[in-house]
Image (cartoon, rainbow, N blue to C red):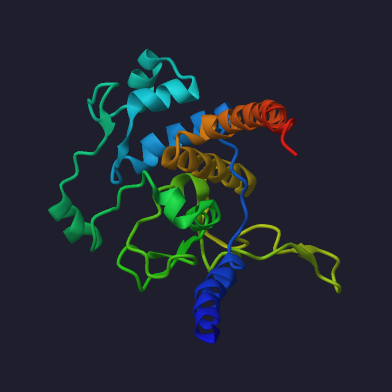
Amino acid sequence: MKKLLTIVLMTLVPSLLLAGELDRMKPDVHDKASLQRGAALFTNYCLGCHSAEYARYKLVAEDLGIPEDLFEENLIFTGARIGELMQIAMPKEPAESWFGVAPPDLTLNARVRGPDWLYSYLRGFYKDDTRPLGVNNVVFSNVGMPHALVNEGGLCAEEPNIGGRPSVDPMSGEVVGGTACDNWAIEGSMSPEEFDRAMYDLTNFMVYLGEPALLDRKRIGTYVLIFLGVFLIFAWLLNREYWKDIH
């Protein structure tokens, strides 16, 4: 029993410690406006190197309420048809030589990593001249991925404040730790607040991408529970009828 408890603690403690270093985000897959913005970011900035080969363009368009002709015109850049899977043309071998490892498929990334990890990772890049691409990530140390959204979000000159909470400096009365980055090596076209919102939308879309059924699962589950509740009443009445003459 003690060995079992030790194993459980060794498994949970690192996860809890890591969770304390991440910024929180609460996905809302019923916010179609957010999902649509996230889909635009994903297809423009992620789908060039990362595939989502377990998802299909047509299903994404239907779930997000985007007309198929508009989706094909504005969100498909590979020449694929609306009914095809979200694959990329980048060969695996050259990708490994360029990045050190082939960029992974992102269909289930949110389910594997969790939304908090993704949201923190996307906002965790900073300048690091010792790395081949000149950037590092506070969540994924020595990452081999470039900062694809540097023009929009900018590049922090030092490790960003991921997982920290805003506080008030008792000497000056100023709020510190309110943003992920205070010192920029490259300033982006978006304000920090706008970029945080964009990364929320992108993470929200990737949460949907990992489980499209999430849109309907909770709604259907509610109906199932209501049905079982009504059925329980009739089952109880039937059971009482069967046993009423038995003493």
